[in-house]
Image (tube, rainbow, N blue to C red):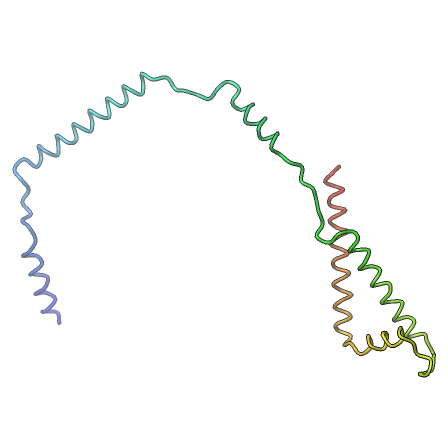
Length: 156
């Protein structure tokens, strides 16, 4: 295996061109270096002749005026509107009133009405769902109140 690799390497080396440089190699390299040096000195001379062009006198003031004109006041618009919050609060109040009525009622089964049936239906819902609903409503209400308080402090 090693012998095969060495043979391939020898063949590749034989195929390579001579490593002897051309007779005028050094002279041609020096000519390209001198040409680059001449171009560099010409460029420096040209740049020194030209004056540096800066921005107009009132450039910064113009840019700042455009930025101030384009700046719109950020208006906070809540995801859940005020009417929706009132609706959520009303549903929660009704829900808790229904729970209170169901717990305090001592009516017999012959006199049940639709409200008591609905309350009994809510008792068939697993308590974890009701707790999750209450927690979500509390978190949404807290978020709403905190963003309102944050908005008022930023406005001052």
